[in-house]
Image 1 (cartoon, rainbow, N blue to C red):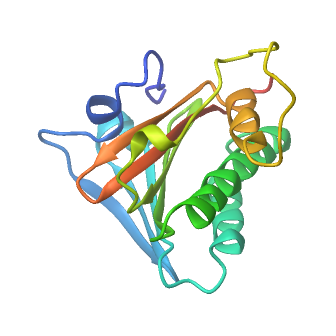
Image 2: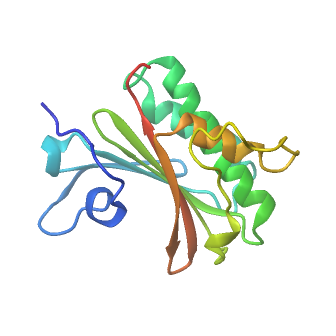
Length: 176
């Protein structure tokens, strides 16, 4: 049985493996790559999708998340993951000069971890809402998306990177 992804979202240690591991089954598709890793019995799949210089990054995001999760989760959870991915890419398009640089998706037995990278360096500019906060004031046009992200994910965070930041979302793949 494959190792499941469980516990706190410790991004560098759990999601980005270090040490002695090898990539296998590298597949290149028209706009990115898919890699299976030797750890966790080869069951962890990493998908990298460049989004800069793409005519319609939202369409590509929808296609890639659907394809990656097909057969690994119920349709309702796939739809949720697609909605989260599209919202995060849309935020990068609307709120950063650089737009989205790439999307990455790490798929474990029962969890997907979605990364949307952009060149914006102000991680504090991404303001979330407390998980399941029902006391929030009326939502304005801006800001609804992160409420959706919060409702559809196990957790999410903003991760500073050398080239900007990544918004990282953990999405459970089991039926709710």
